[in-house]
Image (cartoon, rainbow, N blue to C red):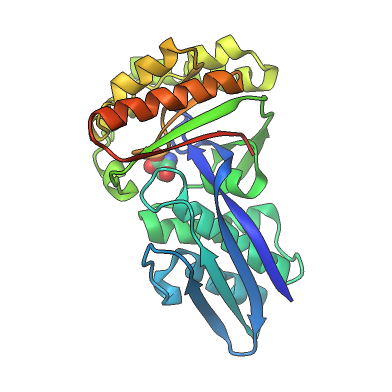
Length: 297
Ligand code: HSE
């Protein structure tokens, strides 16, 4: 039996919800194919140009598959073929797509034996290898689709959030920001006044998604803690954000740990216009860029 899946890119944090909010994108996505082999262990074939390791212990999908095999007490092996379209270091959940895809693929091959919580726990082993930290804000929407809240990691408490019918525009300027580095530069303490603003925004954003209140969504897409530090790593960030909002986007910000920037819009025409603006800004400063105009998966 062969299992073929699409593992979607994701936008983590959704501006104010660092490490707790995320959404799945219709595009881009990776394609992963799995099959059982007699030889115990994991065999990895990469069908892309990213030069990722093929040793299972060093590969994000590999460590997840090894853990799934061990957890299942399976005495054979799994071969995985990975065709990555989500560029590593893009801020679009590339490592999460590999990790979550591996957990989901293994589960289908092994006869649907794992719960959603098991899948997230397994996939977090891959995220830890990639970023040094177990976080589930990319993995969970990648597995469940839509918008998700991680209320807690210990113990795991996942809350799927109603996904309003919104368009997502993403620009990926071709510079690499490693998540581990983008986490390293964050301050470890926050002022109470900033925390109050932030949790007001998080509550507002979740309420906005649940009630489809677009004004509330737009007002709540504000980050007073992480964005002021990380945006320094992204050329033209303030300009892109201001121009996209002027063009009618509800709001947006850094996708995950960057460098990609995302914007939410109410209709496709605005989302396309926002994409053109993003492209124009990066073209004008000579930074190669890719733009996706898509929806929430
Ligand atoms: N929440 C994580 C971070 C997402 O911002 O570091 C990484 O993609």
